[in-house]
Image (cartoon, rainbow, N blue to C red; front, side, top):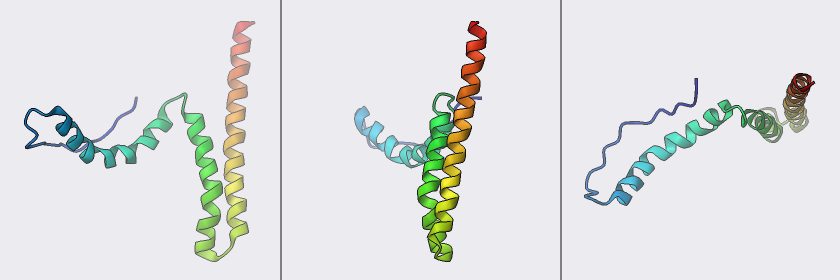
Length: 109
């Protein structure tokens, strides 16, 4: 399908012939939308997808204990959940990489 960004219609007035001012004005309007959509779109790009999935697991490893502590005042349970999420993401990516390596080595032979 590809990467797709949804940006609001923008009209810049008062910039005259100054393209730099117009670009900054458009950037100021679009940047919040781009920064919100960029992680999801980058995760869809094939070479970056494994890094995004491992990064999400690492994020869970850090944020799960914080969320669990805020909810139930139990850090260890959140740490266990976050570590499990990270280990699962790394294991799946290692298996995927191994399968791809085996497929390519089979094609070479």
